[in-house]
Length: 303
Image 1 (tube, rainbow, N blue to C red):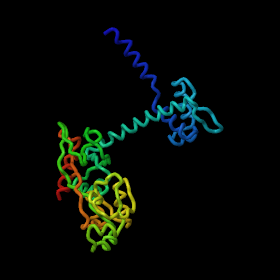
Image 2 (spheres, rainbow, N blue to C red):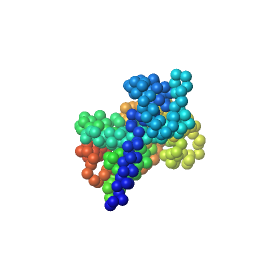
Image 3 (tube, rainbow, N blue to C red):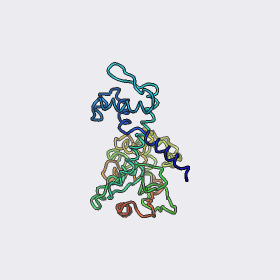
Image 4 (cartoon, rainbow, N blue to C red):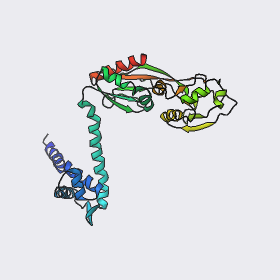
């Protein structure tokens, strides 16, 4: 045990040598704005306080970080390299604070889901959740999330059934690819049967989802294509603008269909899509709001 003393003394010395946070903030602001005076205004400090913080930091690194240029300053070569280190360190601190922000509110829930589901189905129903349970909802629009760590995420809505010792998935919503278009175009196409209807208006397709229209390749005709997109939300926008017939997820088009912004063309075949699953942790929820949101989502989807 007698050999531990020098080691503790070494780490204590290293800890004392770390620069104060105020010096790093002064450096970041000065490097970004190129002026001690502007950095002082940014941080609500005096110019002499900024200069003092920079001097302390330059003492700590053992070399100049800024060079005077007229009334301003510019980073030296060493300063340019050090800027990356400081920016990374401060970003880590800020990201860490944002990550734990929900813990300040015990009535909060973090839901991870696809952007299309969030905008097309969930957002229109959130007022109902908050009216019943006045909680704070955090939406993380991530499509490929496969794990709940109870720090970043409480609930996951995705087309993946995620089962493990600490996670359980329940079926939430069935889905299908449906053909939609603007109401005026739908009225013009109403009397046309499939597949002739495909020749009466151009198609709006998803670049990465050709399987949404398996019947298209079976047709001898070659329908006109108005636009091909790589974002499902833009498909709805294009249809709403009257550009043609879009093939979209019925779940993601739910709000637009319900509010009459687009209409479904029932004569065009429907293609089943993977269902949506709601995943939660089998461990004790982070907050009571998590279980309330889980039950509400299931009940609302069933309704």
